Length: 315
Image (cartoon, rainbow, N blue to C red):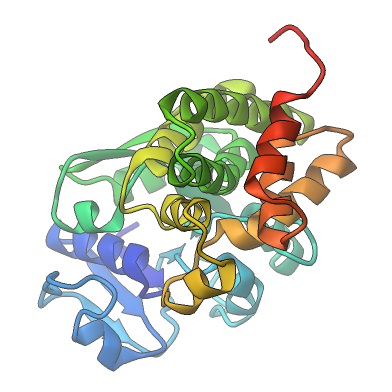
């Protein structure tokens, strides 16, 4: 496998395309707005390599890396070329109407298509700058997993394999919701103790749901869960954490989103994740608190009181 088609020219798709092009791969980057990509609107200061092909025609490459927002994934999958190239998913979230994770959407739209998930604690600007990072490449088929890891690794992006596709996808989705909660805690001045407790309990919620959906708890304890959670709950470049930070300081959700051009995936993911958990017979108190805040159904003080007032239990 040598041809890589990156679908979606947001910050993350552009960063990956730049990384692989700089590594000498044959890369094409599909974008709806070619002019915006070429002027660096998504990744300011990042120069596109000369060997990177930017196109508005859907690529028919040997590997298709899909980096579009979660809520448009289904439509993009329907527009893919007929060539049965494996689909590597970089979307993080759940579909709002169906509550499906990215690989489940692929199974629904393209039954039988080989699918993998690429996820981990990575900020796009650092990847494009060539700073060291690690990610998980999850694919159920060992042969496909090995081939994709060989094709997508670079000197600065170390890949670890996993057979747990759903567990890896869930970690990438749920951490955005927990990051909003962490931002609210810090924005409201509730302290580092509260943030640490929230991250830890949020991780426990993620692990329970992963197991209920057929994934593994240890997957959530790795790069795709804990690693991504730590970065997103503490890094100032995180869109989800910064949204929570603004909410904690009293800014209305509509005002925060109104000034953004990038999608903050945790907003749509929170209610969908709560529905998915309910379907599995699980409670997710931290996720429920975030969903209530985003919906305007509860204030910060009431939400924290509800979390702190839950019945005592063993960890």
